[in-house]
Image (cartoon, rainbow over all chains, first blue to last red; front, side, top):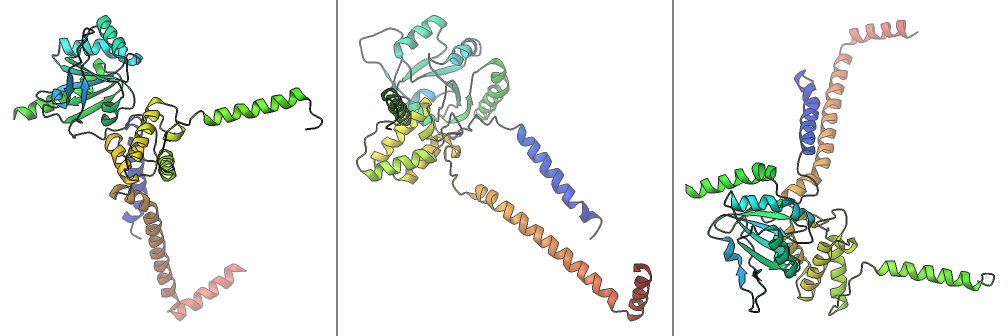
Length: 186
Length: 159
């Protein structure tokens, strides 16, 4: 056996060790990668959460609402404490960064949702009531809060499971948003 | 039961009743058109993973998302969707991870085959090495003079 080939097992071991060690830093096992990346936002038809208790039937919202410009779609509920924690960040994104955020009130009570938004402020351009969780199911939602980045064509480009905070915005969303915007300009 | 007292008997019955109650805790009351449908449903919820509590299947999980997904599987089964169609429906929304039995693809096939392939490669390497040493060993025996000297040396040193 030549001298050089004696090093093959060692090299293989080192390569394996590097790859496997890198695996430790990969995705948190509790976060499922989204099956919907680069797929169109699912079709839906759900009632809008109105600001007042109007006796008229609520306006229906469809997936057309996410098209036309880049949107964040935030899945939340009044029963979800983390959603309360991320709320100030969403308010800032809506007011200071000019982000258009669509809220999906997931498996929640519409009355409680109205009161919740009244109390804390409403960062959403539109809030959709997903009482049965049908849109959530189509989106692969398994726990709130979840935030989707949707481009102007209505294609889901990114999904974040967990609270939206400044660090997540800076590290995960801002670069992707910039990439989408520059791609659409070219 | 002759020697046990009435209170003791009642206590045993009560305890047995309580265990029965626990056994029913996770079962949803779904209606099925045929027993075949029900069997398909039970099979599917056993092999689908709860997306939230990752080490439980849908049948064993108490989480709300598992309840929602069981309801959805029931709806799809009674709708007449085949097992494969139902699996595809869920994988489209939740990804491959929702299946306990991952579907065979290029990557998963390669992953399963890799250990066997590595073992075969190992055997191949060993085989090549053995063949080489055997070849080297027979070279020395061709020279009788050297062999005689070797035998003599061995006799001297082995004693």
